[in-house]
Length: 264
Length: 363
Image (tube, rainbow over all chains, first blue to last red):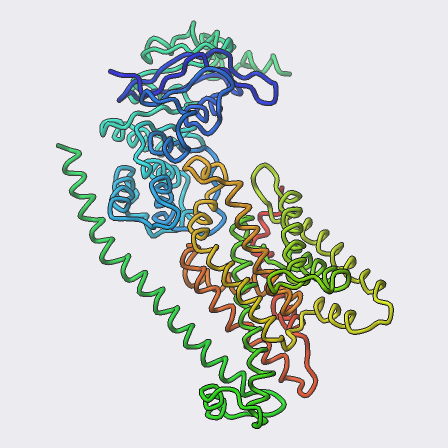
């Protein structure tokens, strides 16, 4: 096991507003990691630092033992792909045309797609099970289909590490499970994954590790059963998860739940 | 093992894609391009025959093959009036259409057009300043009008781009409002130049025709200069076309896969301004061509800019040669400005597009 992604004493600030200070963690080759943490803690920022889209203020982010800030953008994009949360396409591009854009880091200024590029696109479409959608227009797809196409776009970069920003967001339960199947299949194929996840229930069974971004900006990393524990989550999310069963009980009993009284 | 099998499946299906879909796609594009080039040739010859003096197709072809003979009236008409004008409208049409395509890609918005976003207006003001204040300036054969037109266009697009962008996106509303405000200010500033003209002379008339969009009969030297500008601009567009496809997926994404977004935007602005300035120096402010032609091409070919670029250039030429021929024959012997014609056709079309994208109004 070697560290594929390594954060060493990483600090980052947006316009003098510190978001992280001295973050340390690593993601190993072949891992399927879930990045969790309360809203606004900087999960997206952390992913963008890991993708090298944002430069860190201090410390270093390394990918496959090479510092990201020493790599050219196109070189970094061959090692790591970030599947963004927001992705809008103004024109009616087909799925195939969109996924082909993932080959950009491999292309020269004047050259078009070569045989190897087409094969990579084909493989990306196949791994995410969207081959049948290739000639459809992206903007006309459903949410679940779009999400898979976005992942195919990332895979077309043939990255060693695939970063996903809340891939299950705004999908229905069936589509969420489909997407998790897709991630598991990718991981079985040897793709290392780090995904920011909102829905903690979806983590066990798919992800091999959980990285919890705590309010004091420590990253606590462990197996799902070690991190997804009431006492850990209570502190990190500033909410008492132990009250949950009780809350459900109260709802079922038809009484005014505690949270309703509190807000009124 | 699994990977191996998957790779086999992958390579087999990609081989199919290579031979089948890819080839027919390219063949389709070639077919369309050839058809359009043929149509352009036909339109050019027919258009040269039309006007106050009708000249038959056979005679037009004969004159073109034999070259310019100064004794023959028809030859003089063809070589000194019709041919320069028809070529000028072909250049202007190609330039405005490609500029429209570039700006639509830059703003990620199908409503952008050199007229709508004020780039034509900027070029007209720049050219006007050149005409009034620096009439004797010349650099490598480029007069002050062309050079200042370029400067005006670059400055305007940079301004509108800066005004209309909100968080990396250019919504329809801000684009149209910024473009409207800037181009209104520009056209009134251009009228202000009239005040500087002491005896309401030639320059004012040139200015007035610029602002309505009239393709005048250019001198051959002028035609050559603009042809060089447009050709250079189009060559610069070739590598930009694929970048436009990547940029369509968002600045953030493009940056992630290694596109140097700001530099590419600048290159698009410069190339688009160069060809807009060339078009404006020949035909003034002609509206909506850059909106209609790329849109039509997109309906047939889809949004891939590498395919749209050549098709848009040729289709734009055909469109404006036809438009200008109509403009100078429909009310013969008097002429209507071709800008007026494109405004009549393009205005409703613009409104139709706007209505179709109305869901984007909300900011």
